[in-house]
Length: 248
Image (cartoon, rainbow, N blue to C red; front, top):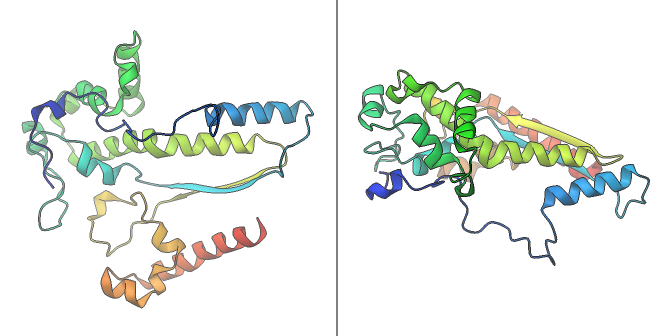
């Protein structure tokens, strides 16, 4: 799938990280930011206030490459196609990425910084800190290693969209008295799922294993097959989830 042709998409702020249908804090159904609610609940219970509900148990996790799938559609580098009409997903070579003529810091601003931060006085600090945290250098505008570049973009987008929020929520729940939090990171890429190895374990592809798709003849007939080892992995994952549902 080719990126949009409108040149404005290369300069619009937060084209990747914005959400048009985000939850609304309305003061009724959602009275406050969920993080604030959990922090207050933990503080109240630590102070000896009675718990309003049974202590929760939580099973929560992420995958190794949370952001990769969405980059195919939303990274939007000029004249760079990540999904072709025949369904293949090629890794752009260094020459193609160089021809896109992007500036890495503008890319961080345009794709991964929220709109409210663009006019903030700390904008440059945030952008530089992001580049430092993910080991992005000025010379990366000329991308010597395509795979490394895509994995850095994946790490940034995955952390923004999924990983950081998931871990923060798990930590908040773990701060409540008498709670149990079970966290996982799913790293296996299904060998025959149609994506090349460099894409890794992408968002949502652990669901196959939770619901036992390696044991579904219809799924394997309609979509893709699994190895014997992947069937064993699915059996293990299903046991974890079933035991949690039964005893958690």
